[in-house]
Image (tube, rainbow, N blue to C red):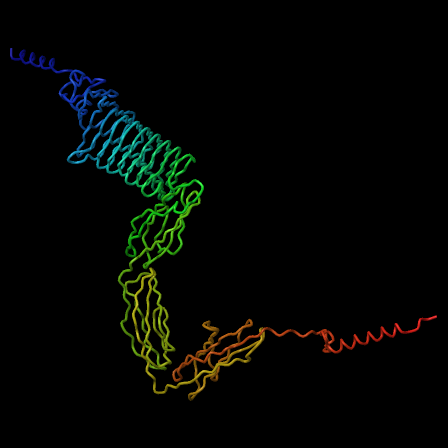
Length: 614
Protein backbone atom coordinates (compact mmCIF):
# COMPACT_ATOMS: atom_id res chain seq x y z
CA UNK A 1 0.00 0.00 0.00
CA UNK A 2 2.90 2.42 0.83
CA UNK A 3 4.61 1.68 -2.48
CA UNK A 4 1.49 2.50 -4.49
CA UNK A 5 1.05 5.78 -2.61
CA UNK A 6 4.63 6.88 -3.42
CA UNK A 7 4.12 6.13 -7.13
CA UNK A 8 0.92 8.17 -7.20
CA UNK A 9 2.69 11.17 -5.56
CA UNK A 10 5.60 11.06 -8.04
CA UNK A 11 3.23 10.91 -10.98
CA UNK A 12 1.25 13.86 -9.66
CA UNK A 13 4.44 15.91 -9.18
CA UNK A 14 5.60 15.22 -12.72
CA UNK A 15 2.23 16.14 -14.11
CA UNK A 16 2.34 19.50 -12.31
CA UNK A 17 5.82 20.51 -13.78
CA UNK A 18 5.44 22.55 -16.99
CA UNK A 19 7.46 21.63 -20.06
CA UNK A 20 10.70 23.65 -20.52
CA UNK A 21 9.99 24.52 -24.16
CA UNK A 22 11.32 27.95 -25.34
CA UNK A 23 9.14 30.44 -27.18
CA UNK A 24 10.19 32.18 -30.38
CA UNK A 25 8.79 35.45 -28.99
CA UNK A 26 8.73 36.59 -25.40
CA UNK A 27 7.77 39.76 -23.55
CA UNK A 28 9.01 41.91 -20.72
CA UNK A 29 7.15 44.59 -18.76
CA UNK A 30 7.90 47.02 -16.00
CA UNK A 31 5.28 45.21 -13.94
CA UNK A 32 6.26 41.72 -15.06
CA UNK A 33 7.81 38.86 -13.09
CA UNK A 34 10.71 36.65 -14.10
CA UNK A 35 8.79 33.68 -12.65
CA UNK A 36 6.27 34.12 -15.47
CA UNK A 37 6.58 32.26 -18.79
CA UNK A 38 7.30 35.66 -20.46
CA UNK A 39 4.19 35.47 -22.61
CA UNK A 40 2.27 38.57 -23.65
CA UNK A 41 -0.24 37.98 -20.89
CA UNK A 42 2.38 36.95 -18.33
CA UNK A 43 5.51 38.96 -19.18
CA UNK A 44 8.87 38.73 -17.45
CA UNK A 45 10.50 41.54 -15.48
CA UNK A 46 14.00 41.60 -17.10
CA UNK A 47 15.72 40.80 -20.35
CA UNK A 48 17.92 38.32 -18.47
CA UNK A 49 14.83 36.54 -17.20
CA UNK A 50 13.28 36.38 -20.66
CA UNK A 51 16.32 35.29 -22.66
CA UNK A 52 16.45 31.85 -21.07
CA UNK A 53 12.84 31.29 -22.17
CA UNK A 54 13.41 32.53 -25.72
CA UNK A 55 14.50 30.18 -28.48
CA UNK A 56 17.64 30.86 -30.54
CA UNK A 57 16.74 33.23 -33.35
CA UNK A 58 13.72 34.43 -31.40
CA UNK A 59 12.73 37.90 -30.19
CA UNK A 60 12.17 39.66 -26.87
CA UNK A 61 9.84 42.68 -26.92
CA UNK A 62 9.21 45.33 -24.30
CA UNK A 63 5.52 45.99 -23.72
CA UNK A 64 5.84 49.28 -21.81
CA UNK A 65 8.44 51.65 -20.33
CA UNK A 66 10.77 50.07 -17.85
CA UNK A 67 14.31 49.25 -16.88
CA UNK A 68 14.97 45.70 -17.91
CA UNK A 69 18.50 45.17 -16.58
CA UNK A 70 21.87 44.13 -17.97
CA UNK A 71 22.19 40.82 -19.76
CA UNK A 72 24.57 38.39 -21.47
CA UNK A 73 23.58 37.08 -24.91
CA UNK A 74 24.93 33.73 -26.06
CA UNK A 75 22.75 33.02 -29.09
CA UNK A 76 21.09 34.64 -32.08
CA UNK A 77 18.28 36.87 -30.87
CA UNK A 78 16.43 40.15 -31.42
CA UNK A 79 15.68 42.48 -28.51
CA UNK A 80 13.21 45.29 -29.20
CA UNK A 81 12.60 47.98 -26.61
CA UNK A 82 9.27 48.95 -28.13
CA UNK A 83 7.86 52.35 -28.93
CA UNK A 84 8.85 53.78 -25.56
CA UNK A 85 12.44 52.48 -25.72
CA UNK A 86 13.33 49.76 -23.27
CA UNK A 87 16.02 50.75 -20.82
CA UNK A 88 19.12 48.90 -19.69
CA UNK A 89 20.61 50.51 -16.59
CA UNK A 90 24.07 49.12 -15.88
CA UNK A 91 25.57 50.72 -12.79
CA UNK A 92 29.08 49.38 -12.15
CA UNK A 93 28.89 46.70 -14.84
CA UNK A 94 28.58 46.13 -18.59
CA UNK A 95 25.22 46.81 -20.14
CA UNK A 96 24.85 44.11 -22.80
CA UNK A 97 27.54 41.48 -23.39
CA UNK A 98 27.40 39.28 -26.49
CA UNK A 99 29.22 35.94 -26.49
CA UNK A 100 27.31 34.33 -29.36
CA UNK A 101 28.13 31.51 -31.76
CA UNK A 102 30.05 31.93 -34.99
CA UNK A 103 26.88 32.10 -37.13
CA UNK A 104 24.70 34.02 -34.71
CA UNK A 105 23.22 37.43 -35.57
CA UNK A 106 22.13 39.69 -32.73
CA UNK A 107 19.73 42.60 -33.25
CA UNK A 108 19.25 45.34 -30.63
CA UNK A 109 16.48 47.78 -31.50
CA UNK A 110 14.93 50.80 -29.77
CA UNK A 111 16.98 50.49 -26.59
CA UNK A 112 18.39 53.02 -24.15
CA UNK A 113 21.56 51.62 -22.57
CA UNK A 114 22.68 53.83 -19.69
CA UNK A 115 25.68 53.53 -17.41
CA UNK A 116 24.63 56.25 -14.98
CA UNK A 117 24.33 55.39 -11.33
CA UNK A 118 26.22 55.51 -8.03
CA UNK A 119 29.02 53.73 -9.90
CA UNK A 120 29.22 54.28 -13.64
CA UNK A 121 28.83 51.25 -15.85
CA UNK A 122 31.99 49.99 -17.50
CA UNK A 123 30.97 49.53 -21.17
CA UNK A 124 27.56 49.84 -22.80
CA UNK A 125 27.49 47.09 -25.45
CA UNK A 126 30.34 44.59 -25.82
CA UNK A 127 30.45 42.21 -28.78
CA UNK A 128 33.01 39.46 -28.15
CA UNK A 129 31.82 36.79 -30.60
CA UNK A 130 29.17 36.12 -33.21
CA UNK A 131 28.56 36.71 -36.89
CA UNK A 132 26.98 40.16 -36.78
CA UNK A 133 25.53 42.83 -34.52
CA UNK A 134 22.78 45.24 -35.56
CA UNK A 135 22.01 48.22 -33.34
CA UNK A 136 19.07 50.32 -34.53
CA UNK A 137 17.34 53.46 -33.27
CA UNK A 138 19.06 53.22 -29.89
CA UNK A 139 21.00 55.31 -27.41
CA UNK A 140 24.12 54.40 -25.42
CA UNK A 141 25.48 56.86 -22.88
CA UNK A 142 27.26 57.46 -19.61
CA UNK A 143 29.81 54.60 -19.39
CA UNK A 144 33.32 54.75 -17.93
CA UNK A 145 34.91 53.20 -21.00
CA UNK A 146 33.34 52.67 -24.42
CA UNK A 147 29.76 53.10 -25.48
CA UNK A 148 29.87 50.25 -28.02
CA UNK A 149 32.89 47.96 -28.27
CA UNK A 150 32.99 45.70 -31.33
CA UNK A 151 36.21 43.68 -31.21
CA UNK A 152 35.45 40.00 -31.85
CA UNK A 153 38.62 37.93 -31.95
CA UNK A 154 37.29 35.87 -34.86
CA UNK A 155 35.95 38.86 -36.81
CA UNK A 156 32.41 39.90 -37.63
CA UNK A 157 30.14 42.65 -38.92
CA UNK A 158 28.67 45.68 -37.17
CA UNK A 159 25.64 47.63 -38.42
CA UNK A 160 24.64 50.84 -36.65
CA UNK A 161 21.61 52.77 -37.89
CA UNK A 162 20.24 55.90 -36.25
CA UNK A 163 22.24 55.36 -33.05
CA UNK A 164 23.24 58.09 -30.57
CA UNK A 165 26.33 57.34 -28.46
CA UNK A 166 27.31 60.09 -26.03
CA UNK A 167 29.05 60.97 -22.80
CA UNK A 168 31.37 57.95 -22.54
CA UNK A 169 34.85 58.02 -21.04
CA UNK A 170 36.66 56.53 -24.04
CA UNK A 171 35.30 55.79 -27.50
CA UNK A 172 31.70 56.25 -28.45
CA UNK A 173 32.07 53.35 -30.87
CA UNK A 174 35.22 51.19 -30.86
CA UNK A 175 35.78 48.92 -33.86
CA UNK A 176 38.62 46.42 -34.35
CA UNK A 177 41.93 46.19 -32.59
CA UNK A 178 42.14 42.38 -32.43
CA UNK A 179 43.42 39.72 -34.81
CA UNK A 180 40.02 39.26 -36.44
CA UNK A 181 38.94 41.22 -39.53
CA UNK A 182 35.86 43.30 -38.80
CA UNK A 183 33.65 45.48 -40.96
CA UNK A 184 31.39 48.25 -39.76
CA UNK A 185 28.58 50.19 -41.42
CA UNK A 186 27.39 53.30 -39.61
CA UNK A 187 24.59 55.48 -40.94
CA UNK A 188 22.54 58.38 -39.55
CA UNK A 189 24.40 58.30 -36.25
CA UNK A 190 25.51 60.86 -33.70
CA UNK A 191 28.66 60.44 -31.61
CA UNK A 192 29.11 63.26 -29.13
CA UNK A 193 30.74 64.09 -25.83
CA UNK A 194 33.05 61.05 -25.79
CA UNK A 195 36.82 60.99 -25.74
CA UNK A 196 36.83 59.74 -29.34
CA UNK A 197 33.66 59.57 -31.42
CA UNK A 198 34.53 56.63 -33.67
CA UNK A 199 37.66 54.62 -32.85
CA UNK A 200 39.16 52.28 -35.49
CA UNK A 201 41.96 49.84 -34.81
CA UNK A 202 43.84 47.13 -36.67
CA UNK A 203 41.78 44.77 -38.80
CA UNK A 204 38.89 47.18 -39.28
CA UNK A 205 37.19 48.32 -42.47
CA UNK A 206 34.40 50.82 -41.97
CA UNK A 207 31.94 52.87 -43.99
CA UNK A 208 30.28 55.92 -42.46
CA UNK A 209 27.35 57.81 -43.93
CA UNK A 210 25.41 60.77 -42.55
CA UNK A 211 27.36 60.73 -39.29
CA UNK A 212 27.72 63.64 -36.90
CA UNK A 213 30.70 63.52 -34.54
CA UNK A 214 30.85 66.54 -32.25
CA UNK A 215 32.28 67.68 -28.92
CA UNK A 216 34.51 64.62 -28.56
CA UNK A 217 37.49 65.78 -26.53
CA UNK A 218 40.23 64.03 -28.52
CA UNK A 219 38.90 63.36 -32.02
CA UNK A 220 35.68 62.98 -33.96
CA UNK A 221 37.18 59.98 -35.80
CA UNK A 222 40.28 58.27 -34.45
CA UNK A 223 42.01 55.60 -36.54
CA UNK A 224 45.36 54.09 -35.54
CA UNK A 225 47.36 50.97 -36.38
CA UNK A 226 50.73 49.67 -35.24
CA UNK A 227 53.29 47.09 -36.37
CA UNK A 228 51.66 45.65 -39.48
CA UNK A 229 48.04 46.44 -38.61
CA UNK A 230 45.73 47.85 -41.26
CA UNK A 231 42.58 49.95 -41.05
CA UNK A 232 40.51 51.80 -43.65
CA UNK A 233 37.50 54.09 -43.49
CA UNK A 234 35.23 55.64 -46.10
CA UNK A 235 33.35 58.72 -44.89
CA UNK A 236 30.37 59.99 -46.89
CA UNK A 237 28.26 63.04 -45.96
CA UNK A 238 29.52 63.48 -42.41
CA UNK A 239 29.89 66.46 -40.08
CA UNK A 240 32.92 66.55 -37.76
CA UNK A 241 32.83 69.63 -35.59
CA UNK A 242 33.93 70.99 -32.19
CA UNK A 243 36.16 67.99 -31.47
CA UNK A 244 39.80 68.06 -30.36
CA UNK A 245 40.67 67.25 -33.99
CA UNK A 246 38.27 66.24 -36.70
CA UNK A 247 40.20 63.21 -37.93
CA UNK A 248 43.18 61.42 -36.42
CA UNK A 249 45.00 58.98 -38.73
CA UNK A 250 48.11 57.23 -37.42
CA UNK A 251 50.22 54.39 -38.80
CA UNK A 252 53.16 53.64 -36.54
CA UNK A 253 55.57 50.75 -36.67
CA UNK A 254 56.69 48.62 -39.59
CA UNK A 255 54.10 47.69 -42.20
CA UNK A 256 51.14 49.45 -40.61
CA UNK A 257 48.56 51.25 -42.74
CA UNK A 258 45.73 53.62 -41.86
CA UNK A 259 43.73 55.15 -44.71
CA UNK A 260 40.76 57.52 -44.47
CA UNK A 261 38.81 58.67 -47.54
CA UNK A 262 36.42 61.63 -47.38
CA UNK A 263 33.57 62.68 -49.64
CA UNK A 264 30.98 65.42 -49.10
CA UNK A 265 32.15 65.89 -45.52
CA UNK A 266 32.41 69.05 -43.44
CA UNK A 267 35.30 69.23 -40.96
CA UNK A 268 35.28 72.54 -39.16
CA UNK A 269 35.46 74.38 -35.83
CA UNK A 270 37.65 71.72 -34.21
CA UNK A 271 39.86 72.86 -31.36
CA UNK A 272 43.35 71.90 -32.62
CA UNK A 273 42.93 71.24 -36.33
CA UNK A 274 40.85 69.48 -38.93
CA UNK A 275 43.31 66.59 -39.11
CA UNK A 276 46.17 65.02 -37.19
CA UNK A 277 48.47 62.65 -39.08
CA UNK A 278 51.13 60.44 -37.49
CA UNK A 279 53.61 58.24 -39.29
CA UNK A 280 52.17 57.02 -42.59
CA UNK A 281 48.56 57.70 -41.63
CA UNK A 282 46.75 59.06 -44.70
CA UNK A 283 43.65 61.21 -45.23
CA UNK A 284 42.47 61.49 -48.84
CA UNK A 285 39.83 63.91 -50.13
CA UNK A 286 37.67 63.44 -53.22
CA UNK A 287 37.71 67.23 -53.57
CA UNK A 288 34.12 67.84 -52.53
CA UNK A 289 34.70 68.37 -48.81
CA UNK A 290 34.73 71.49 -46.65
CA UNK A 291 37.90 71.41 -44.58
CA UNK A 292 38.52 74.39 -42.31
CA UNK A 293 42.15 75.55 -42.49
CA UNK A 294 43.05 73.02 -45.20
CA UNK A 295 43.31 73.54 -48.95
CA UNK A 296 43.55 70.90 -51.61
CA UNK A 297 46.11 72.80 -53.66
CA UNK A 298 47.58 75.71 -51.71
CA UNK A 299 49.48 76.14 -48.47
CA UNK A 300 48.37 79.23 -46.56
CA UNK A 301 50.51 80.24 -43.60
CA UNK A 302 49.85 77.94 -40.68
CA UNK A 303 47.89 75.40 -42.72
CA UNK A 304 50.18 72.64 -41.43
CA UNK A 305 51.95 72.58 -38.07
CA UNK A 306 53.77 70.16 -35.82
CA UNK A 307 51.99 69.46 -32.58
CA UNK A 308 53.71 70.99 -29.58
CA UNK A 309 55.79 68.39 -27.76
CA UNK A 310 58.66 68.45 -25.27
CA UNK A 311 61.04 65.52 -25.14
CA UNK A 312 61.54 64.36 -21.55
CA UNK A 313 65.11 63.96 -20.35
CA UNK A 314 66.42 60.55 -19.41
CA UNK A 315 69.66 58.88 -18.30
CA UNK A 316 72.04 57.38 -20.81
CA UNK A 317 70.98 53.79 -21.41
CA UNK A 318 67.41 54.51 -20.31
CA UNK A 319 64.52 53.44 -22.53
CA UNK A 320 62.71 56.39 -24.09
CA UNK A 321 58.96 55.88 -23.79
CA UNK A 322 57.65 56.02 -27.38
CA UNK A 323 56.18 59.44 -28.17
CA UNK A 324 54.14 60.14 -31.28
CA UNK A 325 54.75 63.27 -33.34
CA UNK A 326 51.45 64.62 -34.66
CA UNK A 327 51.15 66.79 -37.77
CA UNK A 328 48.12 69.07 -37.62
CA UNK A 329 46.13 70.21 -40.63
CA UNK A 330 47.88 67.91 -43.11
CA UNK A 331 46.24 66.06 -45.99
CA UNK A 332 47.41 63.04 -47.92
CA UNK A 333 50.37 61.44 -46.18
CA UNK A 334 53.35 63.02 -44.42
CA UNK A 335 57.10 62.64 -44.86
CA UNK A 336 59.55 63.88 -42.25
CA UNK A 337 63.25 64.75 -42.17
CA UNK A 338 65.60 65.43 -39.25
CA UNK A 339 68.38 68.01 -39.34
CA UNK A 340 70.90 67.90 -36.54
CA UNK A 341 72.46 65.07 -34.60
CA UNK A 342 70.55 62.47 -32.60
CA UNK A 343 72.29 60.37 -29.96
CA UNK A 344 73.15 56.87 -31.06
CA UNK A 345 70.26 54.52 -30.30
CA UNK A 346 67.56 57.23 -30.49
CA UNK A 347 65.40 57.67 -33.59
CA UNK A 348 62.36 59.24 -35.21
CA UNK A 349 60.71 56.50 -37.21
CA UNK A 350 57.17 56.24 -38.48
CA UNK A 351 56.23 59.44 -36.67
CA UNK A 352 57.37 58.08 -33.29
CA UNK A 353 60.35 59.08 -31.14
CA UNK A 354 61.78 55.97 -29.48
CA UNK A 355 64.93 54.06 -28.60
CA UNK A 356 67.61 53.79 -25.94
CA UNK A 357 70.10 56.67 -26.17
CA UNK A 358 73.64 55.38 -25.88
CA UNK A 359 75.29 58.82 -25.74
CA UNK A 360 74.98 61.56 -23.16
CA UNK A 361 74.63 65.31 -23.60
CA UNK A 362 72.18 67.78 -25.08
CA UNK A 363 71.08 67.15 -28.66
CA UNK A 364 69.28 70.00 -30.45
CA UNK A 365 67.67 69.07 -33.77
CA UNK A 366 64.83 70.11 -36.07
CA UNK A 367 62.06 68.08 -37.67
CA UNK A 368 60.52 69.21 -40.98
CA UNK A 369 57.34 67.60 -42.32
CA UNK A 370 55.72 67.81 -45.76
CA UNK A 371 52.16 66.68 -46.50
CA UNK A 372 50.58 65.41 -49.72
CA UNK A 373 49.88 68.96 -50.92
CA UNK A 374 53.51 70.00 -50.45
CA UNK A 375 52.75 72.06 -47.35
CA UNK A 376 55.60 72.08 -44.83
CA UNK A 377 56.14 72.80 -41.15
CA UNK A 378 59.16 72.60 -38.83
CA UNK A 379 59.77 72.47 -35.11
CA UNK A 380 62.93 72.51 -32.98
CA UNK A 381 63.53 69.91 -30.29
CA UNK A 382 66.22 69.21 -27.71
CA UNK A 383 66.83 65.82 -26.14
CA UNK A 384 68.83 65.87 -22.91
CA UNK A 385 70.54 62.63 -21.98
CA UNK A 386 72.10 62.61 -18.51
CA UNK A 387 75.51 61.00 -18.05
CA UNK A 388 76.26 58.62 -15.17
CA UNK A 389 78.58 59.80 -12.36
CA UNK A 390 82.20 59.84 -13.53
CA UNK A 391 85.63 60.84 -12.23
CA UNK A 392 89.22 61.10 -13.36
CA UNK A 393 92.25 59.84 -11.50
CA UNK A 394 94.92 60.31 -10.21
CA UNK A 395 94.21 63.46 -8.27
CA UNK A 396 97.73 64.90 -8.76
CA UNK A 397 100.99 64.49 -10.68
CA UNK A 398 104.59 63.92 -9.62
CA UNK A 399 107.19 66.65 -10.24
CA UNK A 400 109.75 66.30 -13.02
CA UNK A 401 113.29 67.48 -13.77
CA UNK A 402 114.71 68.68 -17.06
CA UNK A 403 116.70 66.07 -18.88
CA UNK A 404 115.28 63.22 -16.78
CA UNK A 405 112.61 60.68 -17.78
CA UNK A 406 109.26 61.62 -16.27
CA UNK A 407 107.49 59.17 -13.97
CA UNK A 408 104.99 57.68 -16.42
CA UNK A 409 101.42 58.39 -15.31
CA UNK A 410 98.30 56.64 -16.61
CA UNK A 411 94.97 58.51 -16.33
CA UNK A 412 91.87 56.47 -15.52
CA UNK A 413 88.34 57.49 -16.54
CA UNK A 414 86.19 55.93 -13.84
CA UNK A 415 82.56 55.23 -14.75
CA UNK A 416 83.16 55.47 -18.49
CA UNK A 417 82.16 52.90 -21.10
CA UNK A 418 83.86 51.89 -24.32
CA UNK A 419 86.96 53.64 -25.62
CA UNK A 420 88.00 56.83 -23.80
CA UNK A 421 89.65 59.77 -25.55
CA UNK A 422 91.71 62.37 -23.67
CA UNK A 423 91.99 66.06 -24.54
CA UNK A 424 94.31 68.60 -22.88
CA UNK A 425 93.38 72.26 -22.51
CA UNK A 426 96.66 74.02 -21.76
CA UNK A 427 100.34 73.38 -22.53
CA UNK A 428 102.62 70.60 -21.34
CA UNK A 429 106.32 71.26 -20.84
CA UNK A 430 108.36 70.55 -23.91
CA UNK A 431 109.31 66.90 -24.07
CA UNK A 432 106.19 65.58 -22.32
CA UNK A 433 103.26 64.17 -24.27
CA UNK A 434 99.97 62.41 -23.62
CA UNK A 435 99.69 59.14 -25.50
CA UNK A 436 96.54 57.00 -25.12
CA UNK A 437 95.86 58.43 -21.70
CA UNK A 438 99.45 58.08 -20.45
CA UNK A 439 101.67 61.08 -19.62
CA UNK A 440 105.18 60.17 -20.68
CA UNK A 441 108.47 61.58 -22.00
CA UNK A 442 111.41 63.66 -20.81
CA UNK A 443 110.77 67.33 -19.97
CA UNK A 444 113.26 69.79 -21.43
CA UNK A 445 111.55 72.95 -20.22
CA UNK A 446 111.57 74.04 -16.57
CA UNK A 447 108.65 75.77 -14.91
CA UNK A 448 105.08 75.22 -13.72
CA UNK A 449 102.54 74.08 -16.35
CA UNK A 450 98.82 74.05 -15.44
CA UNK A 451 96.36 72.27 -17.73
CA UNK A 452 92.91 70.67 -17.69
CA UNK A 453 92.45 67.09 -18.83
CA UNK A 454 89.06 65.94 -20.14
CA UNK A 455 88.30 62.25 -20.62
CA UNK A 456 85.32 61.37 -22.87
CA UNK A 457 84.04 57.81 -23.13
CA UNK A 458 82.42 56.04 -26.09
CA UNK A 459 79.03 57.41 -25.06
CA UNK A 460 80.11 61.09 -25.13
CA UNK A 461 80.11 61.42 -21.37
CA UNK A 462 83.08 63.23 -19.82
CA UNK A 463 84.99 63.86 -16.64
CA UNK A 464 87.53 66.67 -16.21
CA UNK A 465 90.25 67.51 -13.70
CA UNK A 466 92.82 70.30 -13.40
CA UNK A 467 96.50 69.38 -13.01
CA UNK A 468 99.85 71.11 -12.76
CA UNK A 469 103.19 69.68 -13.86
CA UNK A 470 106.16 71.20 -12.03
CA UNK A 471 109.52 70.72 -13.79
CA UNK A 472 112.69 71.61 -11.90
CA UNK A 473 115.84 72.86 -13.62
CA UNK A 474 118.67 70.30 -13.52
CA UNK A 475 122.15 71.43 -12.41
CA UNK A 476 123.62 71.11 -15.92
CA UNK A 477 120.64 72.58 -17.75
CA UNK A 478 121.66 74.88 -20.64
CA UNK A 479 119.46 77.36 -22.42
CA UNK A 480 119.84 78.00 -26.14
CA UNK A 481 118.13 79.83 -28.95
CA UNK A 482 116.97 78.56 -32.33
CA UNK A 483 117.58 80.53 -35.50
CA UNK A 484 115.59 79.88 -38.67
CA UNK A 485 116.48 81.03 -42.19
CA UNK A 486 115.58 80.24 -45.79
CA UNK A 487 117.97 79.55 -48.65
CA UNK A 488 116.26 82.25 -50.72
CA UNK A 489 113.75 84.89 -49.64
CA UNK A 490 111.93 85.99 -51.70
CA UNK A 491 111.91 83.03 -54.03
CA UNK A 492 110.04 82.14 -57.19
CA UNK A 493 107.32 79.56 -57.70
CA UNK A 494 108.93 76.37 -58.93
CA UNK A 495 112.37 77.19 -57.56
CA UNK A 496 113.97 74.91 -54.98
CA UNK A 497 114.13 76.42 -51.50
CA UNK A 498 115.03 75.01 -48.11
CA UNK A 499 114.87 76.19 -44.51
CA UNK A 500 117.56 75.60 -41.89
CA UNK A 501 117.22 75.74 -38.12
CA UNK A 502 120.37 76.24 -36.00
CA UNK A 503 120.76 75.83 -32.25
CA UNK A 504 122.84 78.69 -30.85
CA UNK A 505 124.34 78.95 -27.35
CA UNK A 506 125.34 76.55 -24.62
CA UNK A 507 128.39 74.33 -24.32
CA UNK A 508 128.80 71.06 -26.15
CA UNK A 509 126.91 69.37 -28.97
CA UNK A 510 123.09 69.42 -28.62
CA UNK A 511 121.10 66.40 -29.79
CA UNK A 512 117.39 65.86 -30.42
CA UNK A 513 115.06 66.89 -33.22
CA UNK A 514 113.70 69.99 -34.92
CA UNK A 515 110.05 70.13 -36.06
CA UNK A 516 109.32 72.43 -38.99
CA UNK A 517 105.90 74.08 -39.35
CA UNK A 518 103.99 75.94 -42.05
CA UNK A 519 101.54 77.83 -39.89
CA UNK A 520 100.14 75.06 -37.70
CA UNK A 521 100.86 72.33 -40.23
CA UNK A 522 103.75 70.03 -39.33
CA UNK A 523 106.05 69.79 -42.35
CA UNK A 524 108.71 67.40 -41.09
CA UNK A 525 110.67 66.29 -38.01
CA UNK A 526 114.42 66.32 -38.66
CA UNK A 527 117.21 64.98 -36.45
CA UNK A 528 119.71 67.65 -35.38
CA UNK A 529 123.24 67.24 -36.80
CA UNK A 530 126.09 69.62 -36.01
CA UNK A 531 123.61 71.96 -34.36
CA UNK A 532 121.60 72.24 -37.62
CA UNK A 533 118.56 70.67 -39.23
CA UNK A 534 117.48 71.39 -42.82
CA UNK A 535 114.23 70.75 -44.62
CA UNK A 536 113.68 71.15 -48.40
CA UNK A 537 110.29 72.71 -49.01
CA UNK A 538 107.88 71.29 -51.54
CA UNK A 539 106.98 73.50 -54.51
CA UNK A 540 105.01 76.47 -53.22
CA UNK A 541 102.43 78.56 -55.04
CA UNK A 542 102.92 82.34 -55.14
CA UNK A 543 102.05 83.97 -51.84
CA UNK A 544 103.34 84.64 -48.34
CA UNK A 545 104.02 81.84 -45.84
CA UNK A 546 104.78 81.86 -42.11
CA UNK A 547 107.33 79.20 -41.26
CA UNK A 548 108.51 78.20 -37.81
CA UNK A 549 110.54 75.53 -36.05
CA UNK A 550 110.78 73.98 -32.59
CA UNK A 551 113.80 72.28 -31.03
CA UNK A 552 112.96 69.35 -28.77
CA UNK A 553 115.89 69.74 -26.37
CA UNK A 554 117.86 66.85 -24.82
CA UNK A 555 119.29 65.84 -21.44
CA UNK A 556 121.28 69.09 -21.14
CA UNK A 557 119.82 71.55 -23.64
CA UNK A 558 116.40 73.08 -23.14
CA UNK A 559 113.81 72.97 -25.88
CA UNK A 560 113.10 76.25 -27.65
CA UNK A 561 111.05 77.78 -30.47
CA UNK A 562 112.46 79.81 -33.35
CA UNK A 563 111.06 83.21 -34.21
CA UNK A 564 108.58 82.85 -37.12
CA UNK A 565 110.00 83.41 -40.60
CA UNK A 566 107.93 85.13 -43.30
CA UNK A 567 108.70 83.61 -46.72
CA UNK A 568 107.51 85.34 -49.91
CA UNK A 569 107.05 83.28 -53.08
CA UNK A 570 106.83 85.31 -56.30
CA UNK A 571 105.27 84.17 -59.59
CA UNK A 572 107.55 82.09 -61.77
CA UNK A 573 110.00 83.95 -64.05
CA UNK A 574 109.02 84.35 -67.73
CA UNK A 575 111.13 81.96 -69.90
CA UNK A 576 113.60 83.46 -72.45
CA UNK A 577 112.71 83.20 -76.23
CA UNK A 578 115.36 80.85 -77.69
CA UNK A 579 114.63 81.85 -81.35
CA UNK A 580 115.75 85.45 -80.67
CA UNK A 581 119.47 84.45 -80.66
CA UNK A 582 120.13 87.27 -78.24
CA UNK A 583 119.75 90.04 -80.79
CA UNK A 584 116.44 91.26 -79.53
CA UNK A 585 115.10 91.48 -83.07
CA UNK A 586 111.83 89.87 -82.12
CA UNK A 587 111.19 92.26 -79.30
CA UNK A 588 108.78 95.11 -80.01
CA UNK A 589 110.67 98.39 -80.32
CA UNK A 590 114.18 96.79 -80.54
CA UNK A 591 116.88 98.91 -82.35
CA UNK A 592 117.60 96.19 -84.89
CA UNK A 593 113.98 96.12 -85.96
CA UNK A 594 113.88 99.93 -86.48
CA UNK A 595 117.07 99.87 -88.61
CA UNK A 596 115.66 97.16 -90.84
CA UNK A 597 112.51 99.18 -91.44
CA UNK A 598 114.58 102.28 -92.43
CA UNK A 599 116.66 100.25 -94.90
CA UNK A 600 113.54 98.93 -96.60
CA UNK A 601 112.13 102.46 -97.02
CA UNK A 602 115.37 103.71 -98.74
CA UNK A 603 115.47 100.79 -101.14
CA UNK A 604 111.84 101.34 -102.16
CA UNK A 605 112.48 105.07 -102.82
CA UNK A 606 115.51 104.37 -105.08
CA UNK A 607 113.49 101.87 -107.02
CA UNK A 608 110.85 104.55 -107.77
CA UNK A 609 113.47 107.18 -108.78
CA UNK A 610 115.40 104.92 -111.22
CA UNK A 611 114.88 105.75 -115.01
CA UNK A 612 112.58 103.50 -116.94
CA UNK A 613 114.51 101.24 -119.40
CA UNK A 614 114.23 101.86 -123.23
